[in-house]
Each structure stands twice: as structure tokens, then as C-alpha cells.
Length: 236
Image 1 (cartoon, rainbow, N blue to C red):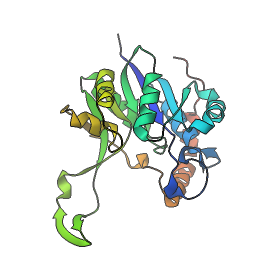
Image 2: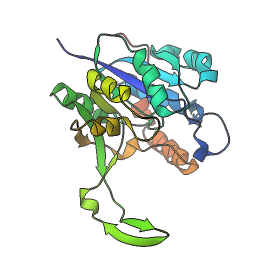
Image 3: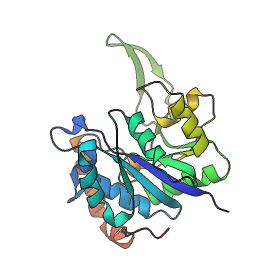
């Protein structure tokens, strides 16, 4: 029997680098909140089953109404990302065996990236992250002075969704200290191998005002594709 895939979307962050305004996941992008674009994209993925969104505590009811067409569970997130992931994980149905954790801010992540992560999990990987090579020269610095140039050939930038066998993710969060790293980092700290698959340029994180402009430009270019694959209520 094919393992059920669930997705956690921690979306309770304020997004201060975007400037004053609503929480980041609720900022408008091409006339709709970033979170709607992210969830619609997930619902376009053949492998995705249950989706749980951790929303800002003050906006839970509003987010439930916003996402009503997409058959998701909405829970209150916490002050830190780890708190939101734990809250969403606790609300995931027991039959889910494979868990993806996806940033709402990576709202244009292609279906192919999600499916590559799922395929690696179904092949037996304990944890999976989509990555891209680092394009820029990277310097290690101290006190505003360059210490050394880091070999970028061995570096990768990490995207989401990050994927996990459910038990691995639960164990990682059960033993995690507050704050700090991403979910894959928690798994790495346990000594569990993390497998890399190919990410995509479109899966960039909307963090700054410039990112919103880039996302709007990409949506304008791919509008016919998004219209064909637009989300409706999930049937699974």
C-alpha cells in the first residue's frame, strides 16, 4: 500500500523583513495572499494528502475561511517556527507516514520539486531536502574582515518542502532545544542522514519586497499554467 503523504505549512511568522503589514503568509501577491498560492500549489501535487497549516493565533478563523476551498486543517501556530511545526504535526492524521514541511513563503515551488522529495522518501530515505548549487562567492568573515573564501562547490542552498519519515521528524522535535535550525537540521543533529534532491529557482523564499515583485513577475509569465492547475477541494 502506498504511504500517505501529509504536509505541514508553518505560516505564523510575522515577516518583518517585508516591512509593516499583515503576517508574511497573508501578504498579497498578485491579488491573493501568499499562503493561498502556496496551498494551491500543494493541492496540485499528485502525492499530497492531508495538509495542516499553522496560522497566526489571532488569524486562525480568518485563515480557515480563506483556505476553505482547499480542504486543509488550520491550527494556531506558536512564537517560534518549531512551535508551529509541532502544533501542525500533532494535528496530522495518524495514517500519514511521510511528512513534508513546507514554507508558505516558498509559494511558487514547482510540483516537480515536491514529487522529487516524495519519491526519495518512498525509496527509503529518512529525510530529504531540495537544494540548489550556491552561485555567489561566499566569504567567511570576522569583525568585518575576510577570514577565508569558502569553496562553494561543496555548498548548497536548501529549499522546501523538506521531507521526513514521520517517526524521524517526531523524534527530532521531541529532543530539540528551542530556537535555532530548520527541521532537517534537527534530524542532522540526531546523526540521521539527510538526502538531497534537485530544487528549483522558482522555489525561492519571499522575504523582502523585491521578492514579492519577482514572484508577481513569475506569476504573470505562468498565468495560463496556474489557471490549468488551479486548486479545488482535495478529493483524497
